[in-house]
Length: 346
Length: 255
Figure 1: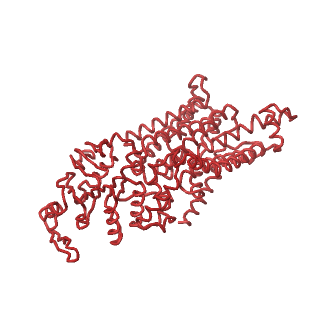
Figure 2: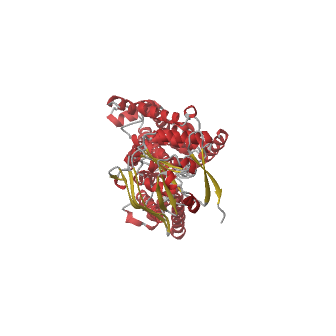
Figure 3: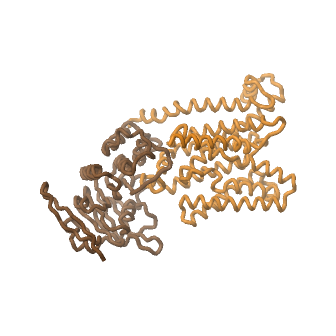
């Protein structure tokens, strides 16, 4: 193929899907920033952004400016990155593990993160040098390494990976409960509970600089491997006979998914349902081919979590509901509808 | 493309499935693998495709050691149609055949016009072109088999490995498929159950309990004694007056 056509074939989907997708995402982010207990007009958001980005010097109320720039904007951006990251992890795991139930928490990542967070909070592990996020990240990675090692020792198939993940999750959840029951006072227990269910309240700009590049990197890696993921449709052996280096792709993509999930969980706690539901929902919208499924899931995950965050802030005045509660409350009925709709189509 | 296998073997735990198979298949040959159930035909094909971990022995493709070639390069040379494959994805017939282009594509060599044409040709070759938008899940066993063969053709391989390709096919499509394969300018190695169909291969290999016990032209390999000992049938040969071909008629040998 001549160079020009190759470039065209590469750029066409970007123009066709990427640009509208970016616009939709931008609208969602703006909605996430303007909607809240204190509704703030779009013009003010633009002025605050201009002030902070290039010192435009608009006269904006300091409190409103603070809400927009230090509170809602980082929160919305992290919500978008987490939604995209969790949805991408879900797509990757469902494709490679060949199990419809696969989600980012399948491999014990969430359970390990909880144990890590609890160990830091209650036991004071790390001597205050690592925060709750650092502990969660370490726990998530440790849990995944253990689960992967167990799956490998059990023969290395995808069924073994799922079973090892279940065993690992149970173990780490038990350790978490044990630590809470043994050592935590009531206030600590409540704080941990709140964190475990997903909480964006503490999100600030440094979190944005971690979450957004991580989601972007994850999207890029996934996009490079869309055909490899397609090739797994008929299983790992069929993928190998289609020229996919199965081991390399598995290590690369499952590693990426784990890294994304661990990062997101360590920033905002474990938010359920996004990684499971969004990929399935998007399969019904754009089909099973990963060239479309990957960007669609990233976009839908981002928008879904921005919306869930808005709802969590607005549902009960003066109180923030854990975002994980909102995603499951909306996600479970939504998923039920998809299942029923799918049955009709078959 | 020439395939030379040396001392191929594989054991599942203590059970030896394939032992010490050495065979040389020259370019362009159609090689049939026959043998009773559980004799190791499918595993031998998987070994030849380099898909079995912890295998013994070696496979050479022309002058290259299969185990040393990158998977993508192997998939450009060898296409493999397994007996039964399943997916839970809602793929269309076209999607499945398009998978055959995977080894030829990369992020910087996206699916192009020539790929569209190759997929279209492959669908035409198995008579599934009009059904390319249909969902894979709604196909019958025979139709799925034909789509998988189209997928293998879309790989544009130089060696085609087929595990009982005529399974599930109605008689018309069995004959059409065998004719299609015989006309392809590639090396073909296929496991077959129908010994009359096997007679049309250039050479046959007979598998029994994991060993390749005979190898040669069909009329030399399929002797009445061998049919009795390996397949436990008594064969009478008939001659078709239309083209003077030899046909077998089988009778079960009781213990």
